[in-house]
Length: 241
Length: 42
Length: 225
Image (cartoon, rainbow over all chains, first blue to last red):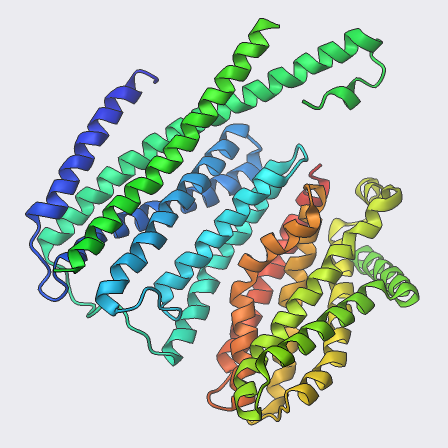
């Protein structure tokens, strides 16, 4: 498996460069918005990638609650963390697009903006829980929180949806159909970002595996040390690394 | 064409965020390798 | 089923009796929300017309933060003398413990709201323009929404470092739709501009979804250690 990593990295880099070229040079300029609209070629694929990663996190959390396999738990953790990174990209590029087009940085009543922000908050709290929890069963708690977070998403969406219909706000102009060339470039960019996200997740997965191995080695070592020093008198109390 | 600045700002911001995250990954990797080396010495 | 209700009632009675004797949670919640009312009254100096639009947000922010005070104390009591460990090994259903704690918190926060609402009305010169009876379902459903998830997350943050900080970090993001429903619903009733039915339905859905999720997952959380 490890041999494929450099090959895949090079392929992803080429794909990203090609997608960038397509987005900046090949695709025609939008008649209404001008060149700024090209932000969507980074914004929208990042959003789709983030949502996909959160979905995988949800599924992995449920599987973990049933099967308790540590590998699935690492998948859930990795997807949440990389998903938050992509979600951050969405939340940063969104206002940069909104400023020249809508004239404002942030529309508090807009449904997509606000629900993405809430999603980001939920998964950041998930990561905070994983960092702060000291018990050996962090994984179970985190999986439960992930299920709660996923249940919350449709409720967030509907609550803001109703809220917005009362407070009219600027939304992306006209729902009409998209130019097929634009859609094609959008999909190329999505593919490129998916490959990139996969690579990042892979690295993060290996990091987590290594991290757990090192932790285990530390625990074993201090156990052995304590056992030598005072002949198995309360060895657990000294096992903290 | 002031708006083009926003376009480049968004693209650069995207890669700055990704680079920052990758940087933290690299830092965590090297720290773990160091710990592994120390464990190996003992 | 019988033992579920019996254990729930017994635990609930114990909690209420303890609270009645000490009044720890209630006093601190009352003082806290009183402070919020006074500070906001100074900060905004509201006219009657203006205050109707912000009062919904103010009142629920005050109750939300006050409820966290009570929720943080929910399980702390059971940690002393290993009471919680005794629960874990006892044959009593885990959900009975959860229900008792949630209902207990619901009663405490409701008492707080009943005591504080008149004060809000006085401080902000409120009088309701919409159908006032709708405030009751909004308050009941909203309080349950806060308390059911709060009790669950308080149990979850028991085993974390600095758990007093952990609870709001976990609870607030998940509660955003409920808080939005409460605030917007209360404002709708106070101003009488638009109907609040949707918000009541939203809160009801939220309550049903998360009560079910809590009951399904609580046993897992209780035994996770």
